Image (cartoon, rainbow, N blue to C red; front, side):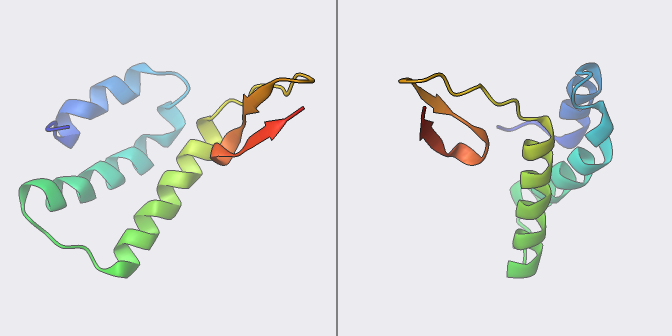
Length: 83
């Protein structure tokens, strides 16, 4: 993806499910901009922080499918369960 924060944020604002996370997206995307366009190398602490924020947003916005007996269903955190 070669888009900047300024290009991505209008799309985030359009999605009602993501509006509550505008600040988190902006911060994350701005950090990505530094790494992609300014060749900034983040510290291990910065990477861990961004990963934690990313997981928070995914967990908060993910929908899970109910496990139906006998079917394989993907649930949050990428885990698979068999009902």
